[in-house]
Length: 147
Image 1: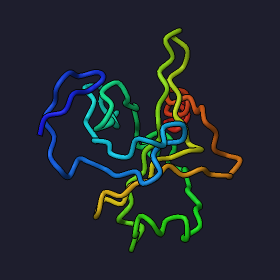
Image 2: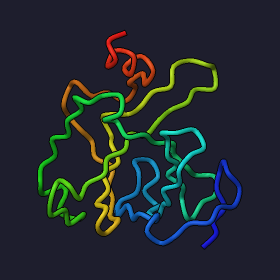
Image 3: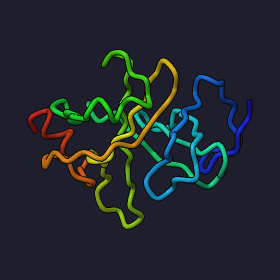
């Protein structure tokens, strides 16, 4: 099926790319269906609304730049996703690319959690003080490599 996107015009997707956020993203609760689309700039992914062309979020696998990232969520909060095993879960961090040229950051406090078996998803809110809404991706990637 074809969908209109915020940044790439019309793109073709398949059903397995569509995720269902039962409660939507914080601040965008009325939008529930999103498509995961590879961005032209790897390793980023677009999380594109299926219902609103100009609503899309850039995301990244947080473990790429923070291998120590941990998500401690009560199992009852994950029940709507019907997660049977940790291997069923895909995690993304939403990315902010400021227009003023400042650092590109990732929100590790509010990850997107997806059950890849049924494509149900949710945005979690973590209370671990190590995770913030603005982690500098480039600086933390360099620190990971010991530079």
